[in-house]
Amino acid sequence: METAFQEYMQRFEEDDFDGALVAELIEVFGPRRTHMKAMYERYKANGKFIPAMTKELPIQTAFDSRVAGDYISEAVDLKIGYFAGVPIAYSYDSEMPEAEAATDVLKRFNRLNRIQDLDSETAKWSAITGYGVRLLYIDEELRERVMNVPSYDCIFIGELTEPTAGLRMYQDGEDLKVDVYTAQRVVTFLETDGEYTPVEDELNVFQAVPLIGYPNNSELQGDCDKVLPIIDGIDEVLSNSLSEDTAQRLAYMAFEGGQISSEDLAEARANGAFMVPAGGKVYFITKDINDTARQNLLTHLVSDFYRFTKTPNLRDEAFTGNSSGVALKFQLFPFNAKVTTFQRKFESGTLQMFTALANVWGLRGNAFDPLNVYLEFTENFPLDLLNEAQVQQTLAGLVSEETRLGLFSAIDNPKEELEQMQQEQQDKAFMGSNEIDTNQDATDDAVPDAPVDAASQFVTE
Image (cartoon, rainbow, N blue to C red; front, side, top):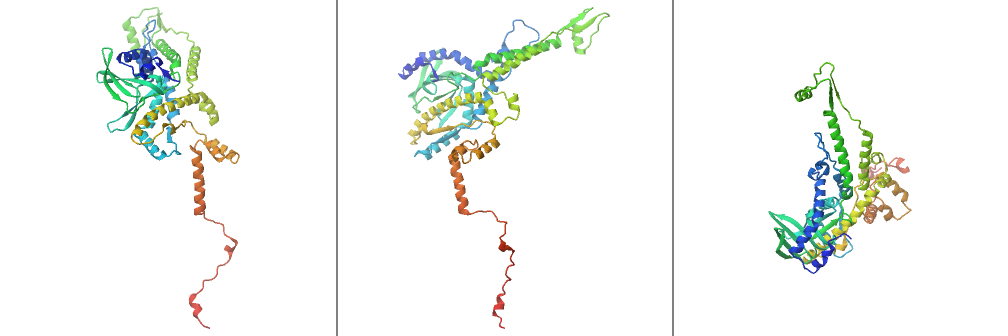
């Protein structure tokens, strides 16, 4: 269960909250909010939030090169491409009497709100900050809408996928406002000098908290939260190596048997030559750098990043060779397990969203049961259709047709596929074969009878 601020649940269940409680919640949430916002900025490669770009060295040198690898987006983007690269399929139970009308309502809502793009963005926020957040609202045309909102601006009271209450902070012009959502009310507080005063109080038409949480996991951790020291270590090794190489190329030069002024040194750097007095000597001082040890450390850190985030390294030899689909799936097993866990969390959040929507649609006279909505996830995995076709041939006659077709990744619904196959067979039987028979029978070699002259029948001998 993904819960937060459980100690405050009773206050909101009893509808006993005020500006002081809102201020307390925001203060307690502060450190978590700072971390979530920093993770989002790091995903965007904002150097102000990357330690390797801002860290103060114990000794300041003239050669201080800073680099930072974009490892957070590497893990996040690959997961989102695998999870939502093939759009999630939404369907309503066709056996229910309201199926046709409910399916139409579902399709219109998804199309209006561009649900495919929304799903990808929600999953992205979840992977970065630990959970994504959607907000349901009614637009000016009285249509049900939903949008993603920054997760670091939202506080949930109770279980994330079925909250007792939710708070959302946002900037309205120069004013900071906080909307507090319960199943009955939406109360807006205005911040003034650290105090929060209620300025609006409306009924909640959704009859459920319209702030929808999508946890990344039960611990509400982002995909890279556990490996930040590893990422920072990679950046530090690369930055130190680059600084050292820069210093080696430009700085360490020795002069023997003479002196050189700063002006002469600057001119020499520009022209690439020195005037050395007789008996003098100019040479570079080189450090004995163990490049092998440095490379081994870097390789180890990079390997640990992929290992502990359960992210496949697509540049690894295991993925660059001609591996079969089964072999690749074994390589992707930890990654697939992580994505599968998120699928379950995503489904729970979506159920809460449709529960709130069903309340509004019921008021409009549209019967809609959120428990009859089904989500079908399809991993964006390269298909080995040749191998699958061979499996289909091998299993023919050994298992039921529906079971056999269900093993074929190109078929989403084996039952519908069987019905379509039967229909095609019936159509062929009814219409007859449309093939042209090019084989002649034995009678085809006989000479055809000569044409009869109709006029000759009337000639008398």
